[in-house]
Length: 273
Image (cartoon, rainbow, N blue to C red; front, side, top):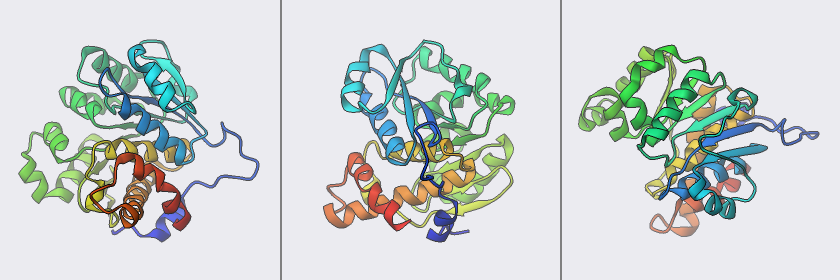
């Protein structure tokens, strides 16, 4: 099925007139490492700009000052401190966390404890590829958002094979591991564990820029925090992310769009949706 704007309009979480920050959704985001503070900022900011009422960024102590300066609207915890993941509404793990042992141990702990919708992206996917069978024991809905290279590490298939069999690879993996699989790229594929498949029609080459995936992850996490079904959140997130890129490209050209611009033009995408 091709996603259309009517699907987004019908399923986008409503923000009620008497809403407060907790009713708008509380997201916890594990992101960033010594040289990737920007990934944490982009994921947190896109989540807030997509309607989440509270975003808690869990970051290494070394980058806390950078993140707090870049995104003062978030609240913060230092990586390694205990966090009750079941007091939030959704969790994101992976944007810029690196491949170190602390990140790997944290991912395994999150997967063992979390009962809320969980999105795993970027470095989180690469870490997960070493422990793929833990998905069989998860307690929560899981959304994975790999590009073709990351999908190759998850499956063992070549990137070329995946590129030529995108729908089949995404659908088979989603069914086998009971996850929602969003395979990024032109005509992004979103597959559910039950076999439902959506193809995203929005987007542009302007989205091929560092940090774009962090923005997408933040958008989907915000929708899940607001109570939207995780599969629908992934479908809507891909559509809104692509539409925002199109809006940015109209003004800035495809050469000049950055990940921060995608966030800036979310307002235009949401106006249309």
